[in-house]
Length: 219
Image (tube, rainbow, N blue to C red; front, side):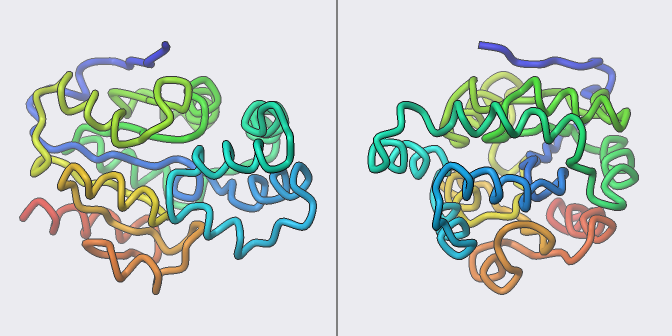
């Protein structure tokens, strides 16, 4: 199990935690993820892919592996995704400045279904890694709920201290199981109108995240 720690001064004297999803929130990777899955599962449609993210994507991948007699869909996916993440996948415009600003007032973490080392290398490329106190990928646990609980326990945080920033209803559900509200982003996999039904709020661009998170914590 690997959990990536960064410089501790970003944790000093900060009560609140922002839990970031990675794909579709920080990284503009939805097209690449869909293309890879479509290659592995010929005939897969974007609507079917969106539907898969209504729950935990690992549960969907496991079911697909069984249905298609594949040994491990996830392993095949990450083998190709890793190459794309290093060369082709880009940061969403404005996300670097937003992360830098938020890190001044909040504890930032990544809770993702991607792999920790992939996330770290991506953030390193944009000089953003040091703004995050914790990066928790798919190899740590397949359930985001469990990874969030690990963060809460390690830092002595409460649900009221947290908000999850995500682009999928599956994440909203897992965070909601811990009574943590979500802020949906309108530039990822699920459309804003879908997210607005379940999220505390929905933003249209990274800059709006700053005000939305401030409002969440009553600042």
